[in-house]
Structures are given as C-alpha cells and as structure tokens.
Length: 284
Image (tube, rainbow, N blue to C red):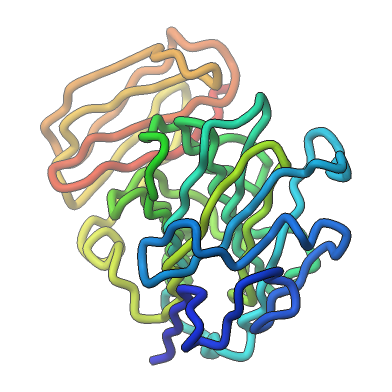
C-alpha cells in the first residue's frame, strides 16, 4: 500500500512563493507568479496552493493552464483502485472563471488529462473526457472549500467522482495508470488548493464498487437497468439540463420506455437505496 498527502507545509519541504520547481511541480513558466504557496487560507495547516489571475492575458480564451505534479514514482504498479482527492476553493470570478482538478495517465503530465473536475462559481462540472462532454453539472456552495475526489476502479473499468464524499457521477475509465495531477485555470478566478491525497487504499467508493454492482444498456428503444441495490427513482435529462422523463421503480431491475425521446445523448440519474448513480446513453 502506498499513499501520499500534500498540504504545502514547510515540514513537507514547501516554501512560500512560486510552486513551479518545488517538490515535483512543473508548469508554464511565464505564468509562474500566478501559482503560489500561500498563507492566505488553508484547510490543513497554514499553507495552501493559491491560483491567481492572468493579469497579462497569456491564457487563450477557452484554454486552461496551470501547475502539474508528477507522482509516477509513488504510484504502485497495477493497483485495483486508486483515489486522488483535494480541497478546492474558488472566489467569485469573472465570466469564464474556472479551475480544473485534473488527473493524468500513462502519457504523463505534459499530455491531455484523463479525468477532470471543473470548479466554477457555484457549480461543479464533471468532464467526460472520452468524448469531452459534461457528464454532470452540480450546484455547490461558494466561498468555501469543497472536497473533490476521483476514484479510478481498474477492475470494473470506471471512474467514480465524489463531492464532499458523495458519489455524484460514474464515468468511463480513460487511463491505464495514474502518473500525476494538476490544477488548471482559465486565469479569470482566484482559488486555493489544499489537503491533496493520492492512495491505492481508497477511503471512498468501496461500498459503491464492491456491493452496489450496477449495469445498464439500451436496446430497441428501451433502457434496461439492473442493480444489487433497489432502484428507487430514474430521472433522464437532455444535455441542456432539462428533465425529460422520470419514473419511480422500487425494484432491483426495470425497463424504461424511450419512445417519447428524440435521437441524441441523454444523462440518467438514478436514486438507489444507498447511493446515487449517473451515466449517459445514446437514443437512436
């Protein structure tokens, strides 16, 4: 079992000032003054990582840039599951203000992320990187630290996403191993990162992975659902976030008729007996 935690404290070898170059953190050097070890606020200890504004206008519109950390030497070979978590805080920001919490796979921290949670002003977006769509869009409080977690389940080939330890979305597994993580920004928001943990002994999702086995498929205009837990309610949304269908079940399996839906991609949110599940499907 290998685990590591980072709270940016002096006893971990951190110093106040630019994060790039400290303890394996790299990034785009012209913006290094925007990513600082700071004593402004923290959830654990005295220091945190502060992500500042792009006063110079270096970051192109629609892009995210920020510091990344290579942890490939600390990640064990072939773990069954691996969890990466962090506390994030974002201030009220300009339009387009966003900070992304990203995890990288075998391509390393210079390649595209394999999983991303985006924190905006009052919202969290789960980015499904298999097709660059929004898997979930969830309202969250502002001006407070929020615990965001990604659990990579290599046995069941899925990624579980948590907000403050609540499972909010289950998506595709887009990596074969974890090699690093990073915190990227549009440069239009001020945020703080603290209390990062990375471990192959997850504190989250063990029940979800081992006990609540769930499957679904679409065939001939019907959505088939099967779960070890009781399915209490099924809600289906279009990609604009509008609820287009809802049914109560109170069964461990069921069928949802999709005839009323037009062709396209839909988001399903299931309320189960002891958890929630979120996934997408395509209606032909």
